Image 1 (spheres, rainbow, N blue to C red):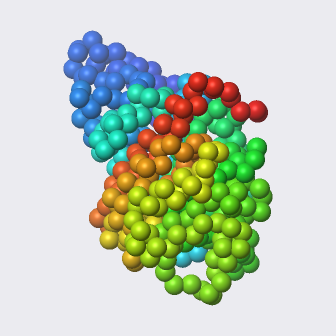
Image 2: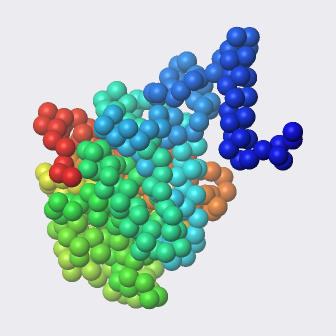
Length: 359
Ligand code: MN
Ligand code: MN
């Protein structure tokens, strides 16, 4: 009998028998030390960080939501991009580069993996990637499930349109405050016949009652405009728009204070568009705008937001095909760690009165 004579099921059975046999044979022979499962963050003191399956931060990959406080989620979707595509490849690249990240934040002392239970929940599964609204609905359904289980989402896009999908899941019980780092306000209107794209998520989020414009701050805004009033919705609705010029004049410490003032004590969301950084630090993105934040300014700004009640965060717009040196994904992984630290701080503060949100 050859492989050709086997049915698919037979072949799978035979292969798994072979695998089971060879595993036990290897074990008996004591030839290979192999990890049987991946139950917890692999200790970098025991295993080199470049080994193992590249989950975010080398975390366990699980969908057991009752065992997770903060869930990392990849959202490999870039159907809302208006110019250079490729952000669909962001999660996989950032997963890979995030193995560089260690366990303790040297600047703040925060050790997120010790404070809370963190896991990689995999990707928000997208079965209709060519249909923008269908894909956004699928992403929302994924996040609604983890939100109902009381898990705080930390998402990795994907283009910025995915933030609307996430907010539809976690902001439905009342508008959230928003801290957005971005070169663009992303409060545009319909564009080229589409109501939804990566230049409009926060306008739609306000219209749908998901974020409160008066508790929203947008930092790093710059670049040329299609029309002078392109971001008029931000100003008209009462958002605090911090141009890169104002940021540069007043500094990250002032910007953090301003963010705390605008957002206040209520629940909030933190959205980090990698194009907020200058393209010298993050060239691999869809709409780069020269003249932006340094990586260090962004890191210090985020670290100074640890007192805010963040109930979710995302990092979006990393496009590996335009990231020829890999520096954008490395930088993104470092920023992702900062986002994780402030989410962990918020989570710990809420721990005393842990009430799972209504399903
Ligand atoms: Mn954006
Ligand atoms: Mn942007």
